[in-house]
Image (cartoon, rainbow, N blue to C red; front, top):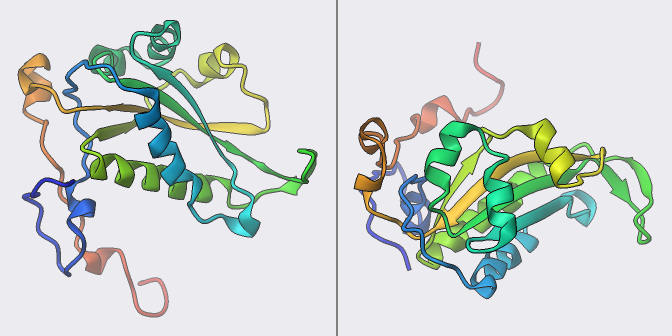
Length: 198
């Protein structure tokens, strides 16, 4: 279910795309694990080179001991609002291709691109389910790698806060002013027929 978005597109597309944005005001409610797993299920069906599926998700639900641990891995600015999310997720990508036993076969050139596709599908499913996501690279990546026991060949791409929209008044004044869907560059600056423009 999507809400009507104030965003205006240059070409007609599904409302699910313009309804997705990244609020910081979450309502602090609990989330059922099944509701979060549904988002991962949507991500699972993303395309990937040679069907390698390099994405991995580490998650913590609000009210569990892991939630505070995960929150502590964000930079202080993000901790200040992400603590009201229903779930925190770390997105990893496997930089190597593996055989069926999990042994490394070689470099996976598109691991970050493919994992980004999975994150996009997760975000779209969240909109469909009446949830919101906010992706973050404001993470203490070295600390997260150690704390979460992430193997060296996996890249920590980002963290995601997930939940239901809360009251904007829960945010500091300077963030309340920014709590609105952002616009996008014109398509003419993003897509070109033929060569890259001079």
